[in-house]
Length: 271
Ligand code: KIV
Image (cartoon, rainbow, N blue to C red; front, side):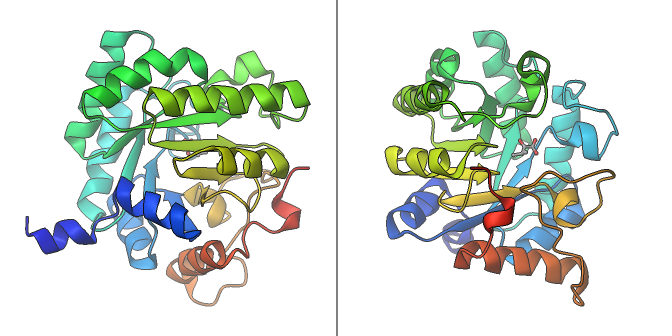
């Protein structure tokens, strides 16, 4: 690979610099070659091969049935369509229950082309985060609404509304940063908590349903295009609706809106 190609790729350093400069970055899930290609064309900075694939690709009612083999397959497809974006991959439900399982499964995803793995949970993941980071596997800590724990949480509900829980999320995010996490992803929390976390963290913070103040924003591909059946979550915006430039135009508009701070607007936020 030429050094020129390597320099063009989005890395952790790129995202760190954007945070320092106060510039927003746009992230999107993708699960296959063409969607990865389109995301790159539109200027998406981070592609997440999310375990949301269990719902939007496989038709399950949660992400729990997704396996490491499923995720590895989709990372492989995305990698072929990717040129510039950082590829993040979800470690699926129960694939990081032990130290050895975490290391082995993260290695599978990294070998397929992921540049960072995402794990759902708080301070209990500090040791796993340290193990992975020390062995050269960057970690994104996913906090707030963690869909793999939907049964424990009692549904896909807004998190951190009460001050005690909000403070606990900030404290545990600090612990994970200290343990070596390189990115924090925060899902479905009030705007105030999204902002407090972004200010408290040295690492970049990506939000989904966490208000406009996070360093980056992420949406699920099918939500951005209005393809998922049923009522969309409050934080979702269908960018294909009324867009005369089709799918490509919709993703480009999303990127522009994130970078200019127009998305998320008030109607996409929790208070
Ligand atoms: O799996 C996924 O797509 C995710 C996003 C909702 C952030 O984790």
